[in-house]
Length: 355
Ligand code: GLY
Image 1 (cartoon, rainbow, N blue to C red):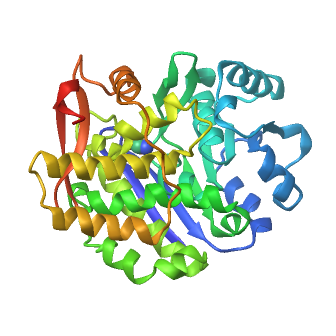
Image 2 (image 1 turned 60 degrees about the horizontal axis):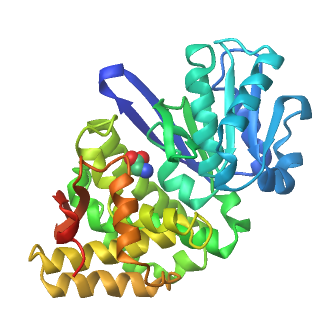
């Protein structure tokens, strides 16, 4: 078992992240050891409940099953989960457990942040995307008709339990979407200022086949590396006032692609990979990098055979990018590569972005 720790300095708060391959049936006992009170509410994805509900062993009374899909991360479900917690009589000593992908983790975290002004919550990410990104770092939110994640809070979990066995049953497209976020870390590694030198791009290049065939020992190290980089960033900038923005590498265009295709046509990872490709060509066009680095990046991306995104109208992409909550007044903010594994934030007027 790998045991990492996140330390948020100004809050003197720290929490463990466990990465393991132990049997799923042992998870409940381990989770309960991190809970002070005697009541829990478990918010679980419908798919995960169907596959693992019995093995996990929580009682029917204490679970809230959330249907799958981004559209479930809404006000109505937020209210229903809060009401379920109230009905169960949870107090501040008790805890809420999120078992599922990013949707479950985000909405549950936001319930936990606001229930009685804050109750403990534990993340059990079951998708690769949630393991390497959303379950770590305390971003919680729900979506509104005005956009994704517009209502939320920074609220760190009490613990994160990553059990690699969940990844065995993840469908191929969901697995690949997680790899979209994984490859992002190659290109931002040095900018994370992680004390340990991980040489992540070498690890990925040397282990591509094993990653794609879901060798659990390889995935364990892969996830550990991504999380070490994310921890380094979050510990330096929990609230995304500066450094944390680098985690949005590939996301400016990625979010716009998802938005104008109504979050239906492409997965998050597919859109982010298209955003990474675009960031490389924009950086080359601006003279920040030479073509060799762009070819290097393209070679890595090709190995994973990500589903390509078809050309979308520039005017629609620009409109969506300007509406992004990370947009800076009327300029559009991009994180762009400037050297191997080094990125920097830039703001552009819309006419400076496309040819
Ligand atoms: N997903 C980006 C972040 O956690 O900041």
